[in-house]
Image (spheres, rainbow, N blue to C red):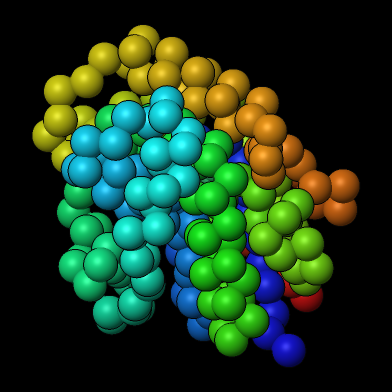
Length: 218
Ligand code: DC
């Protein structure tokens, strides 16, 4: 039986940074499910599919073969055999993913892949519906959050460090809009699982959060 650590929470809560560190310590694989939804959004966008056209999204998403590989411990997302990591981290693709991830067909395809990965490997998996839908029997479940203001500032610093020019106010607005969309969709909305431990990282360091999660595993 594989060991499963599920980390859910809103955009910019630090899930991927924390999950990567926990995975390294535990020597588990890290599965970034948001990257899969982003790859799907990128595919639909590249094929000029109108994200509001639910039937068309359902039809076209079948053409996206999304798989995951690990190179030097890093997750590589392959979209129809091509490494698309470089295209996934923009705010535009993230917002689009929040939109297209509402589609039941999209979720069905990606959830099946996520379940399969977790059945064969010890995993730290992060996303929105991991503790509630993808891995309801996970050994450890965490709901990681922080105030919208703190999350926006972190995203702003991350983008600025990469040399991107961005507007803090706009990032905060986008984050609030994305939370709203992710929490209020019909299928697998973002919510804390009943048996998840809530961690508010607003005034915690990365190391403190990692330590807390590792303690939960013991
Ligand atoms: O975690 P992220 O910002 O990379 O996720 C991008 C979007 O993908 C997010 O706004 C909603 C969607 N998503 C989802 O619906 N379910 C998941 N398990 C992960 C992400």
